[in-house]
Structure formats: C-alpha cells, structure tokens
Length: 306
Image (cartoon, rainbow, N blue to C red; front, side):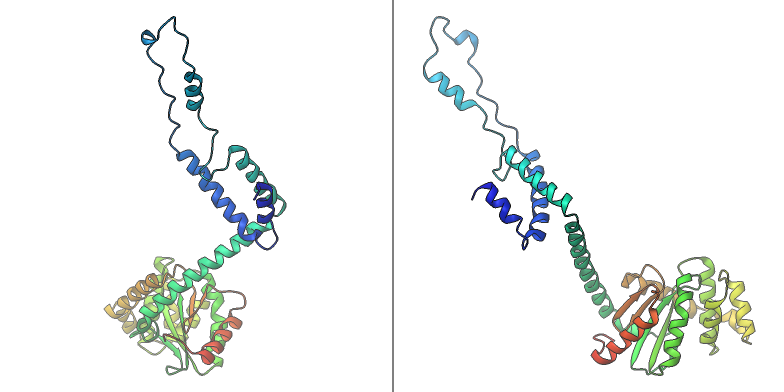
C-alpha cells in the first residue's frame, strides 16, 4: 500500500478518533527511538599514506569500496524516511488544528478510565474497612439505628461546604425514618476544628449530640473550643462532666480512628458522604436530590459490603 493510501485509510471517519492518538504516540516513540539510535559506523579508515604506492593507479575495485562505505539515507526505527515522517507529522498536525475536538474526546476517555480505576480502588478500600465504616464502636449515630440504609458523613465544623450540606442532610434524615446516619468527626482544617469535635463527641455522652451538631454547624464565625462550649452551655449540659469527657481517651481515640479511616479511604476533604457503598464527594448544589437517588438505589439493589 502506498503512503498516500495508508494515510487516507487512517483518516477514515470510523477509525480516526483512535488512529490520531495512536499516531501521536508512535510519532513520539519514533522520535525518541531515532534519538536513541547508535551513531552510524564511520567509514573504513584509509590506508596509511606511506603504504600507498605513489606511481600505481588506484585499483578498479576502489570506487566500489568507496560507494559501499557511504552511509545509507537517514531512517527512523519504523523504516520511514525523514521525508515520509515529516509528511505524516504534517498530516497529523493539520488534522488536529482543524479538528481540535478530537483532543477533548481523548481527554474525556482518559478521565473516564481514571475514574473507573479510582472507583475500583475505593470499592476495594470500602470492602476492606466495612466493619469500621458501617458498624463503628463509638461514632455518633443519628436517625434510626436499625435503618435499612446507612449514610456516613465525614465533616469539619470549620468547613463552609459542610455547613451548606447540613440542611439537605437534615431534611433527608428527619424526613425518612429508615435512615441511619453515622457522623464521622474529621477535624482537618484547624486547631479549632479539633476542639469543636472533642466537645461534640462529649455531648454524645449526655445524649445531646444532634442538637449540639445542628447549632455548631450553623453557627457563624470560626469554630473553636470557646464557641463550642458556649453552645453546649445553652443546651443545659453538665459542663463539668463535658469538659472532663472531651479530654477522655475515648474521645481522642474516636478522632484518631476517623483520621486513620479517612486516610485508608483516600478522603482528602470534607464533606464526604457514603450512601451504602455509593459516594458523594463534596457538597453539590443538588445534594438532597443526589442523596435521595442513592438511597433509592441502595434500597432497590442493596449494598454489596454494608
């Protein structure tokens, strides 16, 4: 097949989306391969001048030897000459300039592949840590402790997106009596975040966690120990006991365990939701709709690892 026919076949509508990236990869590989080729062997050294008879004409075979010693035209690893390679590169460049959307298709395909790989990794991590995720020993539980769908939220009291996510989550939990919500205190933004988390976990021991959480997450300004204690006092909690409990080994262990779990699951920000084994990272504008959709999916299809 001639080069022109080969190029025409490569540019067919059906195969172009795959051929162009392949040509780019091959072109890069060839360029690298060409640069890595060993240098051409030098021509044979001429005989020492003193050994050459001055008066004797050069033998007839000498021109043949000289011709054989000439280096062959430059070739790339694929066998294409420099001219052919330049022609192919020009065709690829021209096509990409006139059809830049092909690169968007390639990028989308790459992102889809990477998302699939990441989803598989997360699924494996969820399965490996299922007991700690869905049946924690000390994490606060809101709603129905025997509900048919479990939701887990990792959050930080100083996270603006966590504050925005509260109303949709509260609407779901308070409207659906079969939801089990597990709260995972993940203070990653500041020292004040950890102080507020410790107070929150201490309120759990007095049966006031959800009331405190609502007031704390909706409170304006930065969360800190001082602001958390003020809110706890308004809830008529036993403050002496609260201050003792917030420094207890159990509270500190819960925070540390949550941090370790987040690391195992690859969670790098808050909020982060699990609905069964489905995931919602962040706080999208339509969070309530996404939550209800996933709850319905879990009820219909089940959770493979819960």
